[in-house]
Length: 114
Length: 114
DNA sequence: GCACTATATTCAGAGTTATGAATATAGTGA
DNA sequence: TCACTATATTCATAACTCTGAATATAGTGC
Image (tube, rainbow over all chains, first blue to last red; front, side):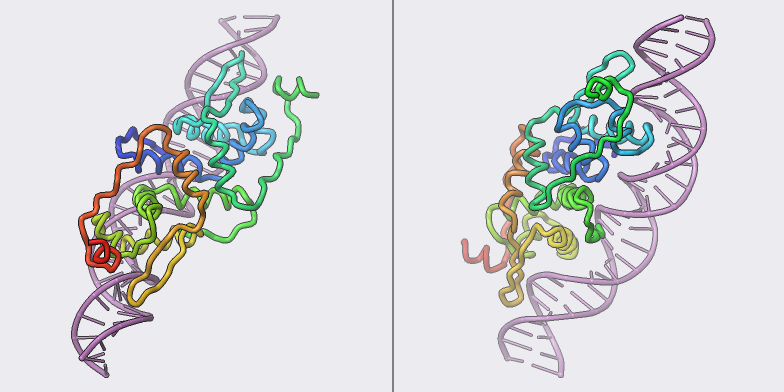
């Protein structure tokens, strides 16, 4: 994505939307709206390789959308900006987003919930 | 931009943000938030060639963001979705967008205002 | 019909981004 | 220290997008 620090607010704003302009990243954000999640959790839900998930998380993090919290081997990601929810809701006029199917994973978050 | 009709809501949503992920298109939208404008008006403000403005307008139109109204040779564009204002405001945390400089043009809108 | 104007479309090259494979890093427990 | 696990980064290439030049379309008035 290569988002360079820019002073033109239109470029800043465009970069923000670039980060949002990807189905997988939107799915990640939809999951994180329900609470923080570790990479392996996202991996299990989205059925993608870990490296791919990690790449997309980096894009979101560089855009300033994510905060991370380390706990041992795990890194939990969460949303930083409460206004993102408004943006995501307003951008999908009618169709509600499907609930993310949880296929089970071994991360502390999921084990705790079982 | 090649936005294909999709049933996956995440792809639909990503395409929506793709349309917004461009500085010139954001400038066009910022201008149109103040009211409808013809192509030549946008051309004068943004100091770009007409073909380029027209291309970007097509992208926004295909994304469903713009309505058009023909009046003789002129085509006036306006925003369709009132929620777009919310999205644009929420996506730029602190910096206010600069007012578009109006350098004068000969379109009916501008001539009328003088 | 013609000339003129406002807008739209096509096309090609440069530049950017997405994707997956491979590899690297870093934390944990023994 | 080593082996293991969770996550991050690098790299190459295919795919896509941007941009500008040229050209096309369509409305107006004569």
